[in-house]
Length: 366
Image (cartoon, rainbow, N blue to C red):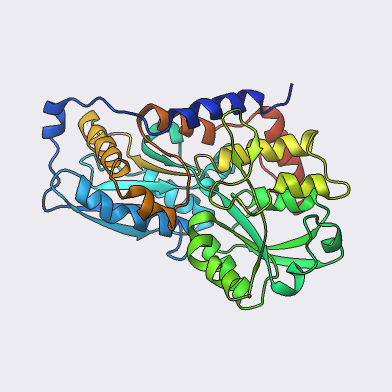
């Protein structure tokens, strides 16, 4: 049985749950009043990437939806591939609802891999929103001409790209490119995917990928101007946990399709199952909003109601389509299930990835 079978079943349950309906205690809800206050929405990245785009999309909507209509301000705490900001949030004890934290797959992966820089615990945090996200890899036009649905004509090219780190969300593209037989050399240490895109724009990198919010905002204009060519998405998941075309980019092939078309790349076996397991952990619930551990049930309920009200807006689909893409936005029980998906992987997949990171990048995790 594939190592991701149980995860796939849970993905199905999570995605079918959609946006959960929340039962709120009206008396408790009335006790939360954020009038005249400022809510800090902290993300552990720079202001140029997909997480910034995501947080800045929700911030003004939260201001309208939270009781008392507080000012919601996005703050950036980049560093150490997002672990610096996550470690900071772990130490906070702001219980009144004026602090929330937005994590991403690059925060989840070091946690999953027991990265020694991780001093945070997801089980201590209270999730109030989970957002599904996709990702798109792209090439400069001269290399895009060599791509015809398989990577066979790209295997002799020396690629360079900007990466946040070996244990970050970037391990999904790094492992995908390795499986395709491509020679892609990462330049580790950038503070966000936006910095990787800027390397591509300056000609310092000749391959890149962005999560959907950043791709929609910053890469689609390059594609339309003939300065970039989409290569593949990581895909989406259907109700049975199978990889299908990304709903936001249905005309772009998935990595699975490209792998199947490329000589030597297999969609079965240890490498594939490890890739799929980390894809499941990193994308269907890639971005989440948390309150600190000591936030009261009333504050949690206020945020859940606010996000549900946002998602129920008649114009939400229109507002989000060009910013977030067509992905599930989950609250309540569905968000809890998504959090569980994002913060655990099968032992076999973890062991494969830890060994690969050591062999290819000299990264030792204990």
